[in-house]
Image 1 (cartoon, rainbow, N blue to C red):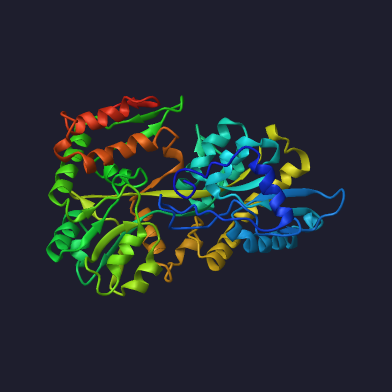
Image 2: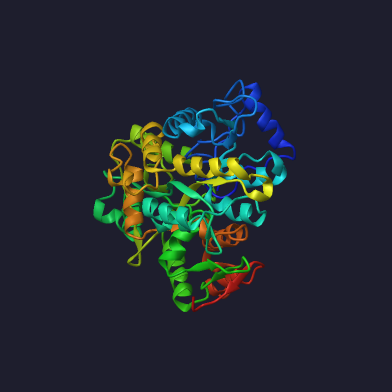
Length: 453
């Protein structure tokens, strides 16, 4: 997703414009946060904020060259990495290594598809872009040795988020794109905050609101997995799901019953609006925000209400809700696009360096990002409770790696489940209730039903 699920679709010829921006100066920025309303990130730009050819080091006629795409917010960091890389690898001291454009991580696949020859040698991309890059033969696979090192340093989940058909294609470096629970501790106790039922009861009693965006496909899987929903991508690229399993059907029915019970308290917008949440956090608000499930909004929320606390997602019917966890990887352009010889070797070595422990520590320290390196993550994110909670949820198995679990056919059908709960009081047109709603999903093109999955 850009951070979330869909990159900004650029017009034909945009690659050339972006590359030229690296030579001509700044460009506009576009948010790619982990929400449809545009918040929770803003860490990328479709224009370059560099001048004189972009972030670069070295370079003369006939020298070895390497081009990079990264978000504009990473430019200063990337400049430091380039310098460090050359100091640690003197054989590349004269190489011309530079950032040529600043697409957001979620824009890379669309951008590369539009004008493949302009694709950078090394690029930072969101996990859900990798499959599209693989299908177009634009990204190089990792070697067995690179995979082993990446797993040792980052864990299997981080590497698996960049796999397609058992082959790994990305060097992982970020996994901070997920949602957690925020609650007003003057309204809700920690015990109440541990269950969805407790949160809703406390909010109803206090006359406050609970924001949980179930009609957005970034959030819908949180309850689907809690009731036993599973899916995977088969060799044909189809989504195989167990949504018609009796346990899942009954679980969705129960979830719908709970929503109907608390319709006046439980706010669903189909695109979470942080402005509405914030309005209810301010002192003297006519209607208070009691709790919300959201991307990283800690600093803004606490600035408005010092009673705000961060916590893992609550349980529903005794089972934990789970967050999608979006990973970021560094990819290397494929041989098909002309990256061969010494430049291909340099590209792989730079990608590995950009994602090693020291570089991820620098990323965390200078940019405040949540990273994948296991050693770096041994130190709690004391200055960012949201990231601390995400790491706790990851350790407890309450996260869903996005990249390996979705294709383009995933988002709208899954969103329809939440929309049916939200819009259809008593299930409305769905006379068969949850079974009809879920059956409508798995019967769509690109889906396969397997209740025994």
